[in-house]
Length: 141
Image (cartoon, rainbow, N blue to C red; front, side, top):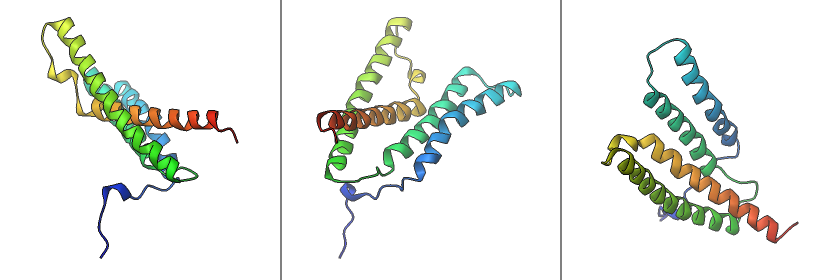
């Protein structure tokens, strides 16, 4: 009987990376189009649209396969998720501290789901790319 394990979640095919890169300009262009069409979008809504679009793009990048998926890449990926979560917690504490300093209280609306998803995926992607770069610097082909 085959069991399900979170350690063996299948990765997306590399073709998903093309779609991932489309999310970055499309979300910005959508906000610009909404502003030109005078839809009455406020800056917080515009930021949330961009955060969510970029979070979707980075999620697809983080979950798509590399050219070579070996044990080293799997280890880098796991370490990147750990590092990303750590930096997300540090970033959220910093955002709340800045808001407390500026306004005298912690504003919950300063932290949105879109921003949290964006930051987490950005930190994971950056940590993963850094580990790959560092590995290539230490072991040039």
